[in-house]
Amino acid sequence: MASPDIGPAPHDKTIDQYISRTGNRVRTVDLTFGLILLANAVLAYLLIAVIVDHWIWPGGLGLWGRFFGFLGLLGISGVILAYRILPYMLHRINPFYAAKTIEQTQPGLKNSLINILSLRTERRTTESDSKVERMVYGGLSRDAARDLRGVSVDHVVDRQAIIKLGYLLIGLVTFLCLYTVLAPKNPFVSFGRVVWPWSDIENPTRVSIEDIRPGDVELFRGDHIEVSAEV
Image (cartoon, rainbow, N blue to C red):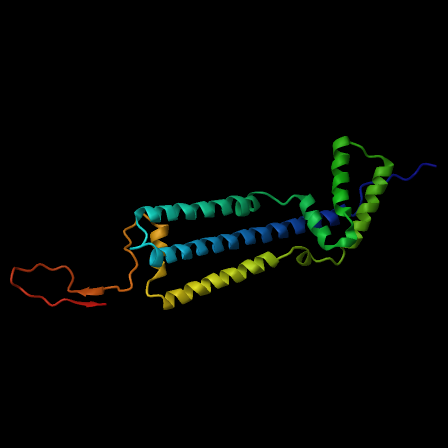
């Protein structure tokens, strides 16, 4: 009596959808991590530049100091963009990595997802499709689909690193706000001097003279004029 033919595993679609959703969520989380990391690195770097410009470098950063600061900012931003942001914008998450992420949080799967993907790859490569292989593959996919029921993708992907970076960013922003209120020199002036080193932004000072009146005028020798300003 001939054995019944065993076709493709009926649970493949469920497994593929879950792996795909997990991969997309991992990609989103890692991309968000990279963006927050970039914000932290840029803000921390600029705050260090502010401290140097205000209190360490005599007379503030000169032209070359500002250019070196600008190049350092570009270097840090470029490294983070190249390794932590652009790869997740240009490429998709490898299904094996997504499967491993799921299995790390669901010990009951016991590497079944990775085994399913490996068997798939082997069958496509060797063009092998024996009855025994299909039975083994069908059993693995059935068990994996059963174990995946009720598992939330939100619980699979770890967000602890993003939360920690978020707290760090809040701390840096808080420090900037306090420094802006309490320090005698304006930190945003130093920000501009580093970000646009070729500009004619003057050194930050404790005293600023504004609203000078009457402005540009012409006088004859011996004439007098009253000058007012806000110091």
